[in-house]
Image (cartoon, rainbow, N blue to C red; front, side, top):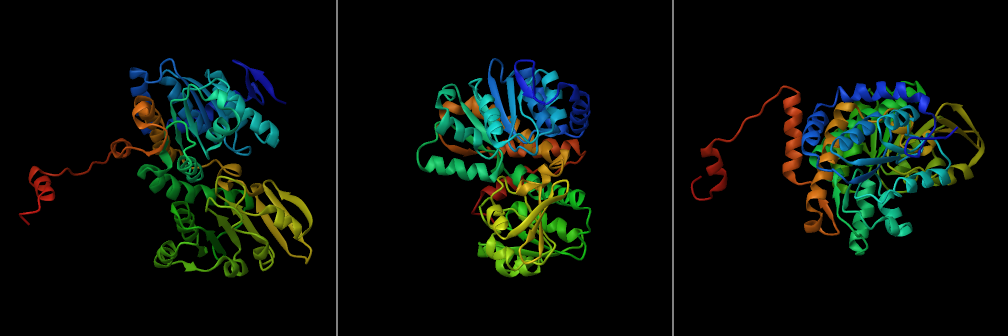
Length: 422
């Protein structure tokens, strides 16, 4: 049952807050970089008097980011970026912590959209977006809520693609920092975070062994690299499908078999899509799959596995285990879909490890400060995270790990900057 509480938040049940606090406290204890930034924000108050709206997968790590932004003086409103990744106990805990929340687990599509709009009705000064939905709503549906927006930060590959399309059409109205494209995001979050959390979601959902099975990784970007690497570590035989010849050669050099999807479909036991594109597994592929094939998606939207074409081949459908649907095909084969084709690592798991999201959300926090400090100079475009901020996060991480690195001597700097004396 949905309840309204403190500042008109809309959540499922405020009584769930104690468990949510435990989750948030646990991740906070394992996010030293974000803790350091929180200390800076508490002193500097970079967001004092500003309203910040956040749309992210609403679980404990995201909740702690929201608390860090609040510690910087902001009035924070938050909603989920996927209906199946919201954790109701975390939402309740945030409400008790003075953050306005419009989110609940598994709302119907209409309610999900309405909650997202509610999170923008405070007319924010700054936004954090995941997948571009906030930006899309503000530009296409509710421009009346956009007047005060100074800028924002975007979390995902999918969101960056949408933003760059808007920028190309000259329809983007404010600057957005492409956090997804920062080194400390894609090298660690996309690769190590996605790699571990995808297999965590698959393993806990299916309770099946990966060793000896053929895992088909659809897309060999940074997320695909991580998924393939962890599949190999679990003992799976890995097949990669790609549309980019350079990435295909890279996958081959990394020791994986590379096949067109129509051939990979014949041999795969577990399929993971990580492309950001639609219909990468579709009807022609279902036609040749083995019975018992397991499909899941780790891209932002549930369009990578074409569900309508799977249902068109289906005689009966049933839920056989939480987050597993069996599609019994008309020819007697069974194909299983995890988490409705939504992000398996969040819809059927807890998302990336806290130590990984520590770096990503540190980037989000300081990128939000950067766009607030520079929005007039940046203008209405997509910009990269400044390299010095990337380095700052990495340096904080090294220090938290108790590790150090070397520095160039004056002679080494001079050597690298010269061209005459080599």
